[in-house]
Every structure is written in structure tokens, then in C-alpha cells.
Length: 210
Image 1: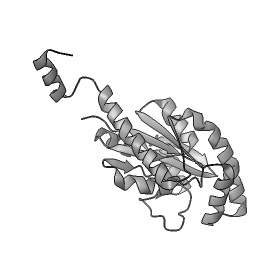
Image 2 (image 1 turned 120 degrees about the horizontal axis):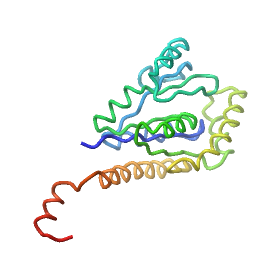
Image 3 (image 1 turned 60 degrees about the vertical axis):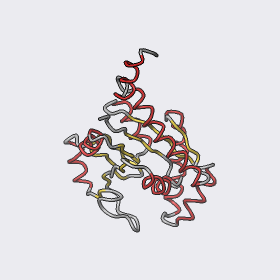
């Protein structure tokens, strides 16, 4: 059985990443979402253990000090971390994992090289559209919106370090592209796995042909 692959998804806040994943995840089998730990409070409708594991700063720091995280980072003054044990267990079971993290965390995981990753950056059509989306969702103060816009400019400078870039202008099209990337990478992994599948190998040996 092939190991699963870790699909790293990053995007500026407001780029529509969450809505995009909600559309794609039910359509692809053997694909799970890695639930991160965070010290930020839940937003409206978010559930503990589903969207995030919401923990205290003290609990997070204890986990960090035990090296429980595959990666962790401070974003907008709050901590976010990915459980090493949970992700590795899912990958070992042959399940592909979607990991929604910022560019700092993505860079840490790629540099560590502990797991096979495919990195995908989700970008808005432009920064003015990003600001419009942030204001439309009416979840943040003006100060927070300005901070998110400033961080978005920095985050988008990292786009070239990702394997794929998806411009989320039309949701349906972006969902089709993301689904296609996941399925293509699965096929590529099988092709690159050592040895041919038995049904092809047996046919090759019987015919004696290339």
C-alpha cells in the first residue's frame, strides 16, 4: 500500500481557501483535513475538533516544548500548530491529508523533509478583491483588516515557492483545478512507485515485449 501524501494549502486570509476546501473535500475519496491546534478564539460557527483544536496558550506551549508539532507558527499574534502524530498516522494508513497552513509553516515542513508534500497556493484575483472579500464577511475590525492586507502582500511573495498556484476568481473553476491537482498527483505517485503493478508486470513477462 502506498503512503498517503500531504497536500499543503496556503492562502492569504480572505482568498476563499476555506470555501474552496469545503467544496472539494466531499468530492475526493481518501482525503482528510488535518485539524490544527490554535490559541485564537473560535469564530462564529466554528467547532472544536472540527475546524481547529482550540487550546490555551499554556497548553500550546507545553505541546510545542514536547515537540508534538510537525510545524508551528505565530500568526496575527496567535499560535497555530500541526500535530505530528495525527498526520503521520493518516499518511501511514494510505490516506491523503490536506493541511491548511500559512507560508511560514509550509516552509518549515518543506525544509524538514519528513514527509512527501505537494504545496498549493490559493490567491485572490488581486488585492482589491481580497480587501472586498474581507470587508464583506464582516468578521474583523478595521485594524485587523489592515493587518491582514499587509500580511497578504508579504504572503503572496512566497507564491513561487509552491508547486501549484490557483487563482480563486470563480469558485467552481478553482475547485475543478484543485481536484485535478490532487488526482494527478495520486496518479503520478503510483507511476513513480518502485516496480510496475502486478497486472502490468505479468503481461509484460508473458509477451516478452516492451
